[in-house]
Image (cartoon, rainbow, N blue to C red; front, side):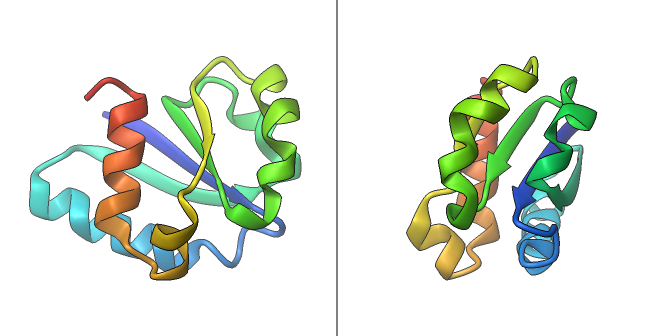
Length: 98
């Protein structure tokens, strides 16, 4: 089972996106856990399969990459703005080589 972590300023603004991504994963039959947390907790999720940063914290990208052992990327702005769970799940899967 893959572990996907979304990070934003406080961990709250991504909660709706997490729900939409979980729905997309269920629809696709993709086994994963998806969580949202504040970006200042990135080191606690160093062994996740992928970490995606909300656009509002994309400036933290280099710092997070230095703190973790998994792929890290900022969520594409349009997909985030539209809360497009399917598109963000596809971005995560691509980063994991799925």
